[in-house]
Length: 119
Image 1 (cartoon, one colour):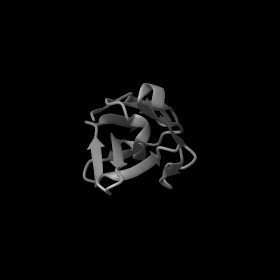
Image 2 (cartoon, rainbow, N blue to C red; image 1 turned 90 degrees about the horizontal axis):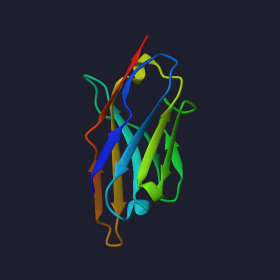
Image 3 (cartoon, rainbow, N blue to C red; image 1 turned 135 degrees about the vertical axis):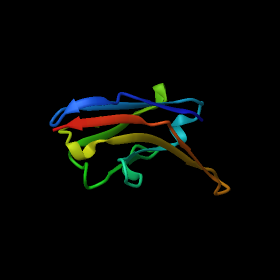
Image 4 (tube, helix red, strand yellow; image 1 turned 90 degrees about the vertical axis):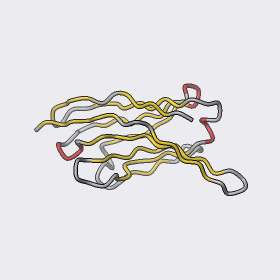
């Protein structure tokens, strides 16, 4: 599975961006998908995820501002980011994971897309 992010860029505080992550492969609907971010000097942190069944979870720092969604027909997961703050500046990574019946788990990462929020 290959994951390709897009949609990053430079935006002023208070603005919005929508990130996309396009996945290859024919079983995208079975994957749990997530977004992570890594700011300079910091560890990569979880932002949000969406299960294969459509359940969503968010980090407290983005709850109410970010929305994760998926379009299985397009094999794409999105992250709508509103009310952006300078502290949201980071490289954003898409993650996909799947666990098979034998408990084997596979995880995949995209190459990342830069989001910069100016004050």
